[in-house]
Image 1 (cartoon, rainbow, N blue to C red):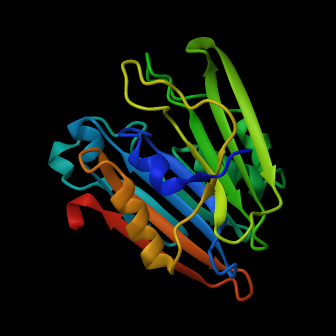
Image 2 (image 1 turned 90 degrees about the vertical axis):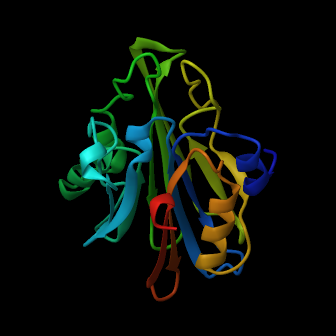
Length: 236
């Protein structure tokens, strides 16, 4: 598989939608978790990431301008049984419930499908990071845009070499309807530096008009301590 530079990949795509990156820091000492959201409408752009007890959630920057909270207000990141779960929708809670019941993350996702936002049928993307640096990614998507069929793809990784990871996002690019992501998660080269440097590099690579919020976490593989960075366009 070709190794792609994630910065170049993001700069070449004005609208990847929502994206998940899981991998390992350049120094090899930390697992890396990143999640970003983008938006084309005023409603989608009227969001920020805020910190919760077990992760982050999306919320309206200006509640008076929020017209439809469905599909855009959820908990993208939650920690469950020492696992960091990151998704682009309320399936975060579905995975959490499945894990609490003693099942794996796949069990919960078999109950879910893509988002009901015709004609896009936005894929649901999800990731699970373990404390040893191994991780899973998944995508639930319509069959070539046909809402009668849901395709569920699951990918399991023992980890990644230092400075590398896997990247999955919802859309191939801009369009009407928006074209769903295709193929396996991309094997990517990650930015070098600490959590702040990585977050800044990823943020600057996202399209300036469409970027909304970014979350980056470094999970120390030895101590299991975390360092988080949140960047919101409305709070820059």
